[in-house]
Length: 276
Ligand SMILES: NC(=O)C1=CN([C@@H]2O[C@H](COP(=O)(O)OP(=O)(O)OC[C@H]3O[C@@H](n4cnc5c(N)ncnc54)[C@H](OP(=O)(O)O)[C@@H]3O)[C@@H](O)[C@H]2O)C=CC1
Ligand SMILES: O=C(O)C1=N[C@H](C(=O)O)C[C@H](O)C1
Image 1 (tube, rainbow, N blue to C red):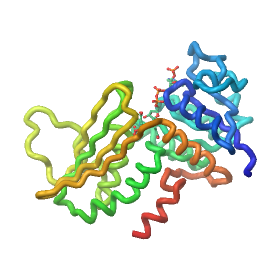
Image 2 (image 1 turned 135 degrees about the horizontal axis):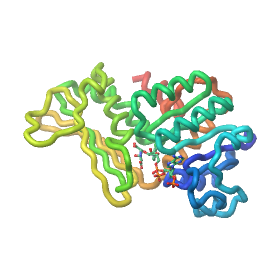
Image 3 (image 1 turned 45 degrees about the horizontal axis):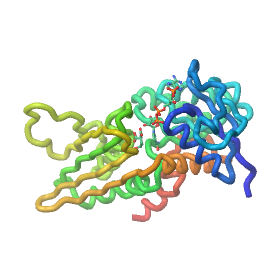
């Protein structure tokens, strides 16, 4: 068995932070070595395991990633975009790899992540589940095969607390559809229909957002042709699914060269999609 890799989890009190701690505790090759929360939060100093609802780990939550970094092998980041960028900068300074699951980055913020990946290996993925990534890998071929006459709309549903819309996954699905048509999503996306919105623009990709209660994350790619409809849906039943994907990415980063990677790289789906 490989030597345990020491993992630091940021935004550790969040929904994903807690799921990550639960998954790391159950993982045979990973060890939680730092738990970092928001500066000033009431839970600082609490045991990271207890905070996540598992056994005490003897590891208090701190607010300072930089101090913890020398004793870490990899960092997993699911915090808000600005905080995530600050943590990635600290990883660059300490030459440590990082897995970023945060969504809602602006174009400028994504460019900063790309720059950081010149110095460290960085996995960036809006969805760490196997199912969504298989869908992302095959969607360009599916939409290319259907042809541009099929109207594509992407519908996503999440819990009531989600901050960004459309979800990072919905936008990634949109990019995959656009790629299948040899286009860029920015040029054909329709994010808003309101009032006398007029007929659907041919070739556009529409997005619809639902928010409610405790929905973990549902995504449907809806493809309507004359007289038929193809709908591809992924439903996440638990955040552990995303957390286990993030751990897979963290483990995959062992010995990796600097670069910007995604879950298609981690899961070997790029080679698979290339076989089509
Ligand atoms: N890639 C994937 O597979 C997935 C991605 N996500 C993405 O992960 C992100 C987090 O989601 P989720 O866990 O549900 O969100 P939460 O709101 O539950 O957690 C966010 C955490 O960030 C902390 N935080 C807030 N501000 C700061 C700051 N300035 N510095 C450091 N930490 C801060 C919060 O601290 P406090 O608790 O003290 O307020 C909170 O613990 C979102 O972008 C979401 O879209 C989610 C699921 C899967
Ligand atoms: O905020 C969430 O919860 C989720 N966010 C990700 C996204 O924006 O795509 C992934 C997942 O659907 C859950």
